Length: 287
Image (cartoon, rainbow, N blue to C red; front, side, top):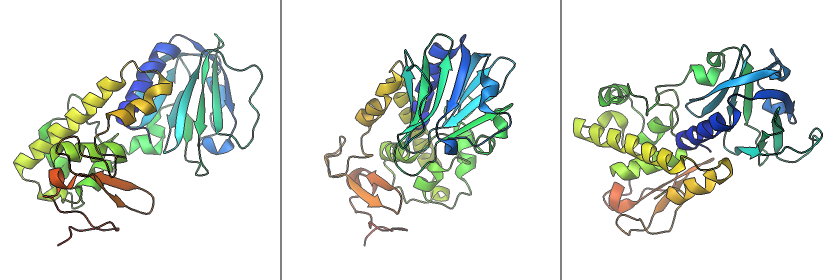
């Protein structure tokens, strides 16, 4: 799933390629992608793009005197930029193409989604706050006003484990499965440590790891073409998706805990005092 750094890079890429251009066609291919119907997608046509914003993991294309085009790429969605779109309308079918946006220049982009779980979402709204997921978002961890005091206040009464708390978009916007693993590895903390149990010193360490990990990922992604962002993300990860490989910090073997629809990766030496975590739901440290 694209997370804050990749969506931030897509925002920058689209700002460069969309702003100042007119949307001439919005062509839904998979009806499931549309989460709003009034105004219809055609309400975007004829309007100039004036800005592109990011809200957590949501992309928001703002048009002049027109609606916003807001999308969430979900787990298997992606945006593909085309310097020249194919002639003729796309044909509905069983392929990954979900929606196409065309500009007056002949350029544009496709939204695609692999797999059978269709969670890619597009909203056409007058105000991004009309999108339920946007309206519920917590603070952006890279915002100037997201300081350590605010972070500590969020975690003070949080009874969940750190892994779940960091991934909660209502608590903090933009962090998902991959970067929560990376942040906890950088902080040298167990994913199952209770958020409310952190000492002031541990809260400081986690805050610094959160900000540094995300800022470094954003910098790595900056200027990378949309089509190469997935590969860039993977190349920069230290523990996530690296089960069985050596930890780049200490050399211990990276381990995994699997759940019904996801998994986490961690380094026992760096994060859990050398003890492996039980690989089952609601795991606790093995004695």
